[in-house]
Image 1 (tube, one colour):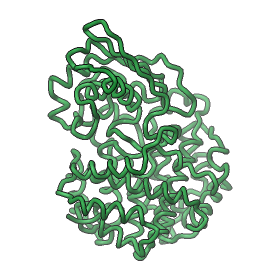
Image 2 (cartoon, rainbow, N blue to C red):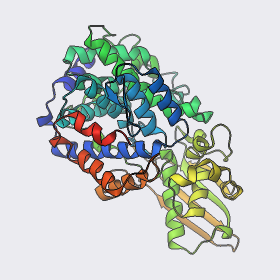
Image 3 (cartoon, one colour):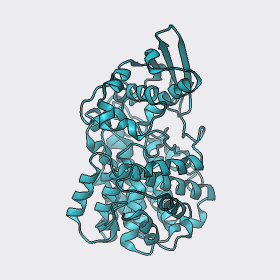
Length: 463
């Protein structure tokens, strides 16, 4: 239980003042980026239905539904807001840890903070930073024990590991001590899940798995606050997470090394394109080709994408077809994303709308794209990816990407993240003026100066 106790004390007892300034800045950018994804996600398929159900279930009016407005019980608010923020698959990733971090943690922290009331902007930053760091460390620590090499890809670290970050962040926001944080994570372990079958089947519940983690994290923290006890050995116990999910193997240094000095959220990647991160290298490479050469869509005979045999290869590399939900099918397809980039010379929210996905033009272009796994993966990277375009005029264009755009080695700037926020606002379910967009962004980027969570949620709240 030493590992679980160390992490619990870390989350509960690290003061805001000891969090490095660059980590504070990165946390605010992650909150801004997640809020941007929520704006765009407010109109995504399935989101309105989730919001309406959450409103129907209601409960004590204590936590705000982002953008739609109104208050409901904190676990349901966390669920609705996380669904919104993940619906476009536009939110941050830890490329090496293979986890979406803030979509689990931020909605849980905000919902728990509102329930408690009077939580300062600095405490929100601390709870998000520490919860996200814990989730990323857990994901990085995962290795695969004997006999688990074939079965492990079925688990999604975003939820299996992220749910602990959600519980820890919510517990910190509620002001629980180390013992309370420990029990919150031990309780949430009884709800831990997350699998790739929903991706394989292109179902809408894919975008709700982090939401279940956020909801579970808040509920677990509330139970711990009332004295309910959780599994003490939720990580290293006989049936703890590392033993049950990963065959008993994990990297202790990735989990505990330089705790409080190395913040893994500094290695999060922001997404420039609203699709599975594994498609981004191919998108970036094809956009370089169309920007550098006068290539018309009709000129294209075929495209070959060379990638590595990564753990998600089978989900994103097969020939494109509409199977379950058209938007999810397209978000998780390298052939579709590359075809869309060729046709539009950009990849943004519009190309993933159902009428566009179903159009003969886009389906025919996607059919010209073949994905082969013949690159050796670079350790700690999703790359490299090489794209070859063969034209009807016997020309061949090629482009290679090693570190995908948005990665710390190929970062999106603060200005690019602000521009993403503005562009996402145009997809919201109600009109957002330029002034309102600036007010939200300014409030988040000045979060350490906000007196209370209520000031933030006024900005993120109703129409």
